[in-house]
Image (cartoon, rainbow, N blue to C red; front, side, top):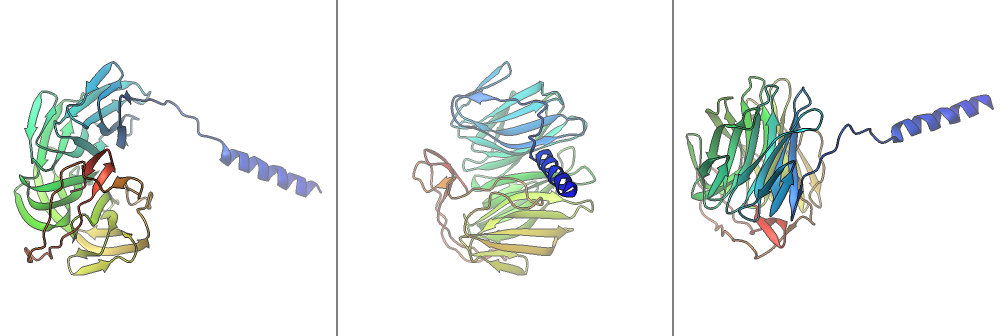
Length: 338
């Protein structure tokens, strides 16, 4: 009887121990007049954190009040280990911009990636990109001063950077997708497919190299996350429809959207995982970071520009396909995926 009682009490104690809510050291908020979303956060070994995303209308953080030039501007916010605000920045764009991913190193420098249309203002600097959709990778010092700002894109293409990571040598990898005619570093590419890529920059912002990882039909592939291991092997993940091509390997979807995870060794594919799913996943292993969108999070809409993609012949060894136009975001203020 005593053994049963002791076992019962031990079971209750263990259950209560695991059921306890975590003790939060601090919680902070930034408030605005419309839609505001934090899409990425990173921290360093000293407990500093930096977050990014977008806001619409007015946006209050600490003593700063930001007002967007369009329906969406980018915010970047840095807090110290005590949760005190270090600095906050607005990246303003007249046609909309999103901050998709951010990194923070132990020197207090931060790396940011996202996309914008036409032009974007950072501090007192104006940068010009594609009238359709341009991507960027930027570096800020510990005080939020801009160190460099690299633009990806051209007038005849769109680009969507989705995630960032560091290599062991300190170089920066940005992952994303592009289509059309675009420029990244000293590389000029033309394709009518959606092509996923990894672009590498040095810590000083110098272009190192561009690698295409896979390709699929327009609007039917999203590369959403990237990670690396201690050997600098790289992992990418996302979702696709129909056919996804990795060099001489191709996979075909069976569900409404299938997910994929691929591992690269020196930019060569060594492993590939595909799983059939009926809708967008909301979470997928620790290899994949970034954002997944389910059926309630995107809409077909006529509230934004529609870019038409027609079938064409084969170019640069990549099969070109057409796809339906679709939009990511809320129906009343949708953003084009492409």
